[in-house]
Amino acid sequence: MSAYDNVRVGKLVLKGEKPKKSKKHKRDKEHKEKDKAKKRKTEVDEDALRHGGWWLAKSVPEITGAVAIEFGERAYLKALDNGLFTLGPPHNDGEGPDPEEVFTAFSINETKISIKSGYGKYLKIEKDGMVTGRSEAVGSMEQWEPIFQDGKMALLSETGFFMSIDPEDDACVALRRKVTEHEICKIRCNAQREAEEDEEPKEEKGDLTEVEKNYVKKFQKFQDKKLRINKNDIKELEVAKDHGTLHEALLDRRSKMKADRYCK
Image (cartoon, rainbow, N blue to C red; front, side):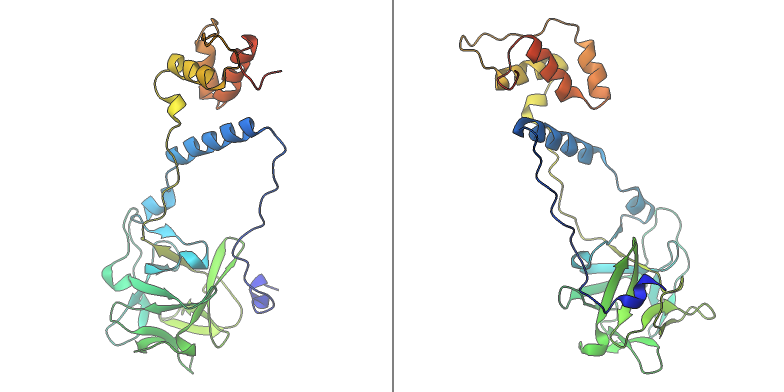
Protein backbone atom coordinates (compact mmCIF):
# COMPACT_ATOMS: atom_id res chain seq x y z
CA MET A 1 0.00 0.00 0.00
CA SER A 2 1.33 3.42 -0.93
CA ALA A 3 1.98 5.99 1.74
CA TYR A 4 -0.18 8.38 -0.30
CA ASP A 5 -3.25 6.24 0.49
CA ASN A 6 -3.31 7.60 4.03
CA VAL A 7 -2.97 11.31 3.30
CA ARG A 8 -6.28 12.11 5.00
CA VAL A 9 -5.42 10.34 8.27
CA GLY A 10 -3.48 13.10 9.94
CA LYS A 11 -2.22 16.60 9.52
CA LEU A 12 0.58 17.28 7.10
CA VAL A 13 3.84 17.64 8.96
CA LEU A 14 5.62 20.70 7.65
CA LYS A 15 8.43 21.03 10.12
CA GLY A 16 10.59 18.54 11.98
CA GLU A 17 11.24 18.42 15.66
CA LYS A 18 13.53 20.97 17.20
CA PRO A 19 17.07 19.67 17.57
CA LYS A 20 18.19 18.77 21.05
CA LYS A 21 20.26 21.34 22.82
CA SER A 22 23.95 20.68 22.70
CA LYS A 23 25.77 20.13 25.95
CA LYS A 24 29.04 21.30 24.50
CA HIS A 25 30.62 24.57 25.43
CA LYS A 26 29.20 27.74 23.91
CA ARG A 27 32.51 28.39 22.19
CA ASP A 28 32.35 25.07 20.32
CA LYS A 29 28.79 25.81 19.25
CA GLU A 30 29.75 29.22 17.91
CA HIS A 31 32.63 27.77 15.96
CA LYS A 32 30.42 25.08 14.43
CA GLU A 33 27.87 27.67 13.39
CA LYS A 34 30.61 29.66 11.68
CA ASP A 35 31.78 26.54 9.87
CA LYS A 36 28.24 25.84 8.70
CA ALA A 37 27.87 29.41 7.47
CA LYS A 38 31.05 29.07 5.44
CA LYS A 39 29.82 25.80 3.92
CA ARG A 40 26.49 27.41 2.99
CA LYS A 41 28.36 30.21 1.31
CA THR A 42 30.01 27.79 -1.11
CA GLU A 43 26.94 25.64 -1.79
CA VAL A 44 25.40 25.89 -5.25
CA ASP A 45 21.94 24.59 -6.14
CA GLU A 46 22.98 22.43 -9.08
CA ASP A 47 19.43 21.16 -9.55
CA ALA A 48 18.11 24.72 -9.95
CA LEU A 49 20.89 25.53 -12.44
CA ARG A 50 19.83 22.56 -14.57
CA HIS A 51 16.31 24.03 -14.62
CA GLY A 52 17.17 27.60 -15.54
CA GLY A 53 17.27 28.81 -11.94
CA TRP A 54 13.87 27.39 -10.98
CA TRP A 55 14.31 25.70 -7.60
CA LEU A 56 12.42 22.75 -6.18
CA ALA A 57 9.75 23.48 -3.56
CA LYS A 58 9.95 21.09 -0.62
CA SER A 59 7.13 22.39 1.56
CA VAL A 60 3.73 24.02 1.11
CA PRO A 61 4.75 27.48 2.43
CA GLU A 62 7.37 27.71 -0.33
CA ILE A 63 4.74 27.32 -3.06
CA THR A 64 3.73 30.88 -3.82
CA GLY A 65 4.13 33.29 -6.70
CA ALA A 66 5.42 32.14 -10.09
CA VAL A 67 5.63 28.34 -10.28
CA ALA A 68 6.03 25.58 -12.85
CA ILE A 69 4.63 22.06 -12.48
CA GLU A 70 7.15 19.51 -13.68
CA PHE A 71 6.26 15.94 -14.67
CA GLY A 72 9.17 13.70 -15.54
CA GLU A 73 12.47 15.46 -16.20
CA ARG A 74 12.36 19.09 -17.39
CA ALA A 75 8.87 18.72 -18.92
CA TYR A 76 6.25 21.14 -17.58
CA LEU A 77 2.48 21.42 -17.55
CA LYS A 78 1.46 23.78 -20.35
CA ALA A 79 -1.69 25.91 -20.54
CA LEU A 80 -3.66 25.95 -23.80
CA ASP A 81 -5.88 28.81 -24.90
CA ASN A 82 -8.98 26.57 -24.76
CA GLY A 83 -8.69 26.13 -20.99
CA LEU A 84 -7.11 22.70 -21.12
CA PHE A 85 -3.60 21.60 -20.22
CA THR A 86 -1.02 19.33 -21.77
CA LEU A 87 2.54 18.28 -21.05
CA GLY A 88 5.04 20.45 -22.87
CA PRO A 89 8.14 19.06 -24.59
CA PRO A 90 11.25 18.39 -22.48
CA HIS A 91 13.62 21.32 -22.10
CA ASN A 92 17.36 21.29 -22.56
CA ASP A 93 19.68 21.32 -19.59
CA GLY A 94 19.82 24.84 -18.14
CA GLU A 95 16.50 25.99 -19.61
CA GLY A 96 13.54 27.12 -17.54
CA PRO A 97 9.83 26.76 -18.42
CA ASP A 98 8.22 28.61 -21.32
CA PRO A 99 5.72 31.44 -20.59
CA GLU A 100 2.75 29.07 -21.19
CA GLU A 101 4.24 26.76 -18.57
CA VAL A 102 4.41 29.39 -15.85
CA PHE A 103 1.56 29.54 -13.32
CA THR A 104 0.86 31.59 -10.21
CA ALA A 105 0.29 29.85 -6.88
CA PHE A 106 -1.69 31.35 -4.01
CA SER A 107 -1.84 30.09 -0.44
CA ILE A 108 -5.30 29.03 0.81
CA ASN A 109 -4.18 27.80 4.22
CA GLU A 110 -1.23 25.91 5.67
CA THR A 111 -1.90 22.83 3.50
CA LYS A 112 -3.74 23.98 0.37
CA ILE A 113 -3.06 26.24 -2.59
CA SER A 114 -4.84 27.53 -5.69
CA ILE A 115 -3.13 27.73 -9.06
CA LYS A 116 -3.80 30.29 -11.80
CA SER A 117 -2.67 29.87 -15.39
CA GLY A 118 -1.11 32.56 -17.52
CA TYR A 119 -4.56 33.12 -19.03
CA GLY A 120 -5.80 34.36 -15.65
CA LYS A 121 -7.98 31.32 -14.86
CA TYR A 122 -7.80 28.96 -11.91
CA LEU A 123 -7.12 25.23 -12.26
CA LYS A 124 -10.15 23.11 -11.39
CA ILE A 125 -11.06 19.44 -11.38
CA GLU A 126 -14.19 18.65 -13.41
CA LYS A 127 -16.70 15.86 -12.73
CA ASP A 128 -15.20 13.72 -15.49
CA GLY A 129 -11.70 14.07 -14.00
CA MET A 130 -10.36 16.57 -16.50
CA VAL A 131 -8.29 19.43 -15.12
CA THR A 132 -9.34 22.71 -16.67
CA GLY A 133 -8.35 26.34 -16.31
CA ARG A 134 -11.58 28.27 -16.81
CA SER A 135 -12.57 29.44 -13.32
CA GLU A 136 -12.71 33.13 -12.50
CA ALA A 137 -12.65 32.60 -8.73
CA VAL A 138 -11.53 30.04 -6.17
CA GLY A 139 -14.03 27.58 -4.74
CA SER A 140 -13.50 24.15 -3.23
CA MET A 141 -12.84 22.55 -6.62
CA GLU A 142 -10.07 25.04 -7.37
CA GLN A 143 -8.09 24.03 -4.29
CA TRP A 144 -5.13 21.64 -4.42
CA GLU A 145 -3.17 20.01 -1.63
CA PRO A 146 0.52 19.28 -2.24
CA ILE A 147 1.31 15.98 -0.54
CA PHE A 148 4.98 15.40 0.27
CA GLN A 149 6.18 11.87 1.00
CA ASP A 150 9.69 10.39 0.95
CA GLY A 151 11.12 13.26 -1.09
CA LYS A 152 8.35 13.08 -3.70
CA MET A 153 5.19 15.11 -4.24
CA ALA A 154 1.72 14.73 -5.71
CA LEU A 155 -1.14 17.23 -6.04
CA LEU A 156 -4.38 16.10 -4.42
CA SER A 157 -7.69 17.55 -5.63
CA GLU A 158 -10.68 18.34 -3.44
CA THR A 159 -12.41 15.15 -4.69
CA GLY A 160 -9.55 12.93 -3.52
CA PHE A 161 -8.01 12.31 -6.93
CA PHE A 162 -4.40 13.14 -7.77
CA MET A 163 -3.36 15.31 -10.70
CA SER A 164 -1.55 13.36 -13.40
CA ILE A 165 -0.66 13.29 -17.07
CA ASP A 166 -2.60 10.86 -19.25
CA PRO A 167 0.13 8.72 -20.89
CA GLU A 168 -1.97 8.32 -24.06
CA ASP A 169 -2.51 11.96 -25.02
CA ASP A 170 -0.51 13.97 -22.46
CA ALA A 171 -3.69 15.65 -21.17
CA CYS A 172 -3.84 16.82 -17.55
CA VAL A 173 -6.36 14.78 -15.56
CA ALA A 174 -7.11 13.65 -12.01
CA LEU A 175 -8.46 10.10 -12.20
CA ARG A 176 -6.65 8.05 -9.57
CA ARG A 177 -6.90 7.95 -5.79
CA LYS A 178 -3.56 6.17 -5.61
CA VAL A 179 -0.25 7.61 -6.70
CA THR A 180 1.64 6.00 -9.56
CA GLU A 181 4.58 7.30 -11.56
CA HIS A 182 2.13 9.40 -13.59
CA GLU A 183 0.99 11.35 -10.49
CA ILE A 184 4.46 12.17 -9.17
CA CYS A 185 5.35 15.76 -9.99
CA LYS A 186 7.48 18.66 -8.80
CA ILE A 187 6.65 22.29 -8.24
CA ARG A 188 9.43 24.69 -9.12
CA CYS A 189 9.62 28.31 -8.04
CA ASN A 190 11.71 31.27 -9.11
CA ALA A 191 10.95 33.63 -6.24
CA GLN A 192 14.06 34.87 -4.48
CA ARG A 193 14.84 32.72 -1.50
CA GLU A 194 15.94 34.26 1.77
CA ALA A 195 19.70 34.51 1.69
CA GLU A 196 21.55 32.33 4.14
CA GLU A 197 23.68 34.23 6.60
CA ASP A 198 27.06 33.58 5.10
CA GLU A 199 29.16 36.55 6.13
CA GLU A 200 32.72 35.54 6.88
CA PRO A 201 33.47 36.21 10.56
CA LYS A 202 35.50 39.39 11.01
CA GLU A 203 38.15 37.36 12.85
CA GLU A 204 38.79 35.42 9.65
CA LYS A 205 39.56 38.39 7.44
CA GLY A 206 43.09 38.35 6.04
CA ASP A 207 45.70 35.59 5.83
CA LEU A 208 46.09 32.84 8.43
CA THR A 209 48.67 34.84 10.37
CA GLU A 210 46.15 37.64 10.82
CA VAL A 211 43.38 35.12 11.58
CA GLU A 212 45.39 33.56 14.40
CA LYS A 213 46.22 36.98 15.81
CA ASN A 214 42.54 37.97 15.69
CA TYR A 215 41.45 34.90 17.64
CA VAL A 216 44.18 35.35 20.22
CA LYS A 217 42.92 38.90 20.77
CA LYS A 218 39.37 37.64 21.09
CA PHE A 219 40.01 34.85 23.58
CA GLN A 220 43.10 35.98 25.49
CA LYS A 221 42.81 35.61 29.28
CA PHE A 222 46.03 37.32 30.43
CA GLN A 223 46.14 40.75 32.00
CA ASP A 224 49.27 42.24 30.48
CA LYS A 225 47.57 42.57 27.07
CA LYS A 226 50.65 41.24 25.28
CA LEU A 227 49.82 38.92 22.43
CA ARG A 228 51.21 35.44 22.78
CA ILE A 229 51.29 33.90 19.33
CA ASN A 230 52.31 30.30 18.77
CA LYS A 231 55.66 30.18 16.95
CA ASN A 232 55.05 26.84 15.24
CA ASP A 233 54.92 26.73 11.45
CA ILE A 234 51.75 28.31 10.06
CA LYS A 235 51.50 25.47 7.54
CA GLU A 236 49.68 23.32 10.09
CA LEU A 237 46.87 25.87 9.98
CA GLU A 238 46.77 25.66 6.20
CA VAL A 239 46.36 21.89 6.44
CA ALA A 240 43.69 22.25 9.13
CA LYS A 241 41.75 24.76 7.01
CA ASP A 242 41.74 22.36 4.07
CA HIS A 243 40.35 19.64 6.35
CA GLY A 244 37.71 21.90 7.93
CA THR A 245 39.35 21.84 11.38
CA LEU A 246 40.80 25.34 11.47
CA HIS A 247 39.11 26.39 14.72
CA GLU A 248 40.27 23.26 16.53
CA ALA A 249 43.85 23.84 15.34
CA LEU A 250 43.75 27.49 16.44
CA LEU A 251 42.49 26.49 19.88
CA ASP A 252 45.21 23.87 20.20
CA ARG A 253 47.88 26.43 19.34
CA ARG A 254 46.45 28.91 21.85
CA SER A 255 46.24 26.28 24.57
CA LYS A 256 49.94 25.56 24.21
CA MET A 257 50.58 29.23 24.85
CA LYS A 258 48.05 29.26 27.74
CA ALA A 259 46.44 32.15 25.94
CA ASP A 260 42.77 31.11 25.86
CA ARG A 261 40.30 31.62 28.68
CA TYR A 262 38.47 28.44 27.63
CA CYS A 263 41.59 26.26 27.89
CA LYS A 264 42.18 24.19 31.02
